[in-house]
Image (cartoon, rainbow, N blue to C red):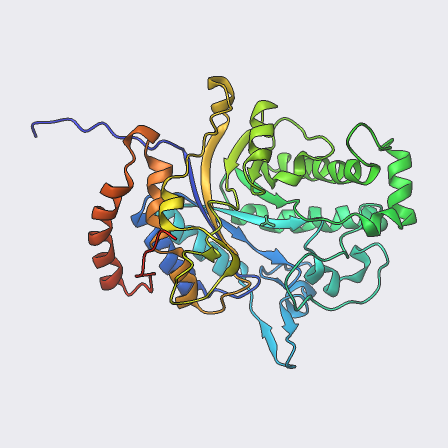
Length: 386
Ligand code: ACM
Ligand code: ZN
């Protein structure tokens, strides 16, 4: 009664990312994470729904995307799969909205599309029958932008997906698309000729072809009232001004984008990839063993790089932590990687740099741990700064 509290988040976009493609996450488990994220006032869930290893969303016009594209044959011959029906997607989006969380879908294109290509082989340059990728890494076989049918396919997909996700953003991926198949494809080379996409400056003809794809896709989504977000590779070969860039290969893509006037979400793999180990002395070796991102390192991350001017810094719209699931198959492993680092993410997203203090955060962590215990969260208990 006797005071006013003035509080506002540092960033409007406070995100986390889930990858149900490498290892599936049930609707019930997605909802549990939404409950926990809302507790930490994280307001955006980036839902990575398609991959080389699995297509995870029902598309009524293309039933093979799920009957073929959602199931992979593992090395030992067993089947692994799962997908969300459109009704389940609505249920997740609605559950999130009640907790003030917007769900952004990602359809990763034109690379990372092996599940769709396995279901509909005409989508690739050679049109040959392949199966889903069963190992991790980057796939050379990608979609063929020489073919109009590829664009028709994506337009159809968007007609079904966009109405399910009412938020303003649509994530179109754009990362890790090798250009080898385009170099050897007559249809792709013809497209390069007819669209005048010859190599220019730093950009090869094939990089300019990727940029042609992104711009066409952006128009398809714009006509449906959505703005695109893409991984920082979408900067290569030129970009239209309405795109938002998600900086993942460190901060340099984000810095370049902000200087060029694009909005940016910072999600650098050196601070915000929660699939990396949280310490060298961790009792559990889940996740990417090649990099350690400690709780303290997450906490001390500042999403606005100092090299940006005040005007450029206005383009940094937020920050996001990503959880790629190659090296974790069960929910308890995923939770172990997410928590308590999500508590640190929350303060990175909410607090101004001058108000942050890792020591004080560690004191607050004591009560956060008690919440995790009561809620049955399998969080990492052994915090180390190494
Ligand atoms: C990514 O981690 N390939 C965006
Ligand atoms: Zn091609």
